[in-house]
Image (cartoon, rainbow, N blue to C red; front, top):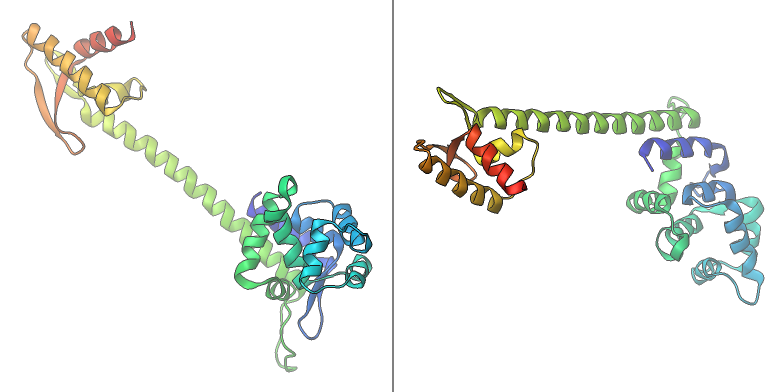
Length: 253
């Protein structure tokens, strides 16, 4: 899930999260389910099971943290408090087995840095009571700004990845061109340069083996082997294209 999609979810549930004058936050069952990446009925069933003889694993987790059965029942209509939201997200992030969701892990990771309460306060633009001269961004303005910022960050990342890909292609082309030498008897290449030109992957060991065979053919045909410095391998030989074609064909046959 991308940051853009997460921003869209946050904007969609903005009407279902709230923070009171004391800064205590809560969200509806539906909003909590959207954050966790599960359907709200799953959470409703878990909350309802707290009154059963065998409550669900999630209900047990909540009650172990000090919440009562009456609390869990009340949340279905009055909203889930911030502390409980954090427990629910952590459950679906790491403890729900095959029901764990990647979205819950991403959201939970964000909450771990600032806390669910601080996060909701921030998303809703809540601050301590301010003087009349102070102004604050409205909830919708803040959410829109955050969503736009996250989308811009993701777009910037995509552009960087595209630029890196283009740079790698250019470097490969430069490497091939650097390995090529114009001589009276035609183009000469190193083994690696020729392999790159052909779009072939070649290991250091394979390059060494092919280099020995190319050297043997050159000596047999009375062709002088030129050598150039290579930062990766030290001195490497340059062989006529015709010799390298013969070596590579022999390896493939």
